Length: 99
Image (cartoon, rainbow, N blue to C red; front, side, top):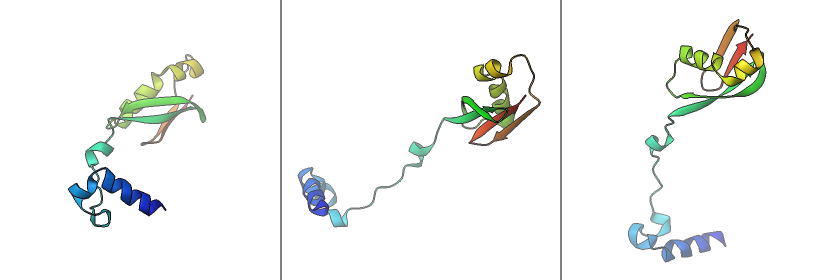
């Protein structure tokens, strides 16, 4: 039933005149610009426990990500005045701050 309804909708919406029959229509093309992201959201872990999320620019380097993690409210709330001993960054995934 679905192919018949799809063909009827294709014709009723005027796509048959613009692109021809549904079986002969070209596949949609991927627009790579639409897939690009300006910002990336990373999971923020403190001592191995998820404490929040961190939004950084997509092209941020490791030093910028570490600085954003240490400057976040979640870090200040859970670590207090203690300085981080180690910061582990998994690109595009998460940041783990060991206090």
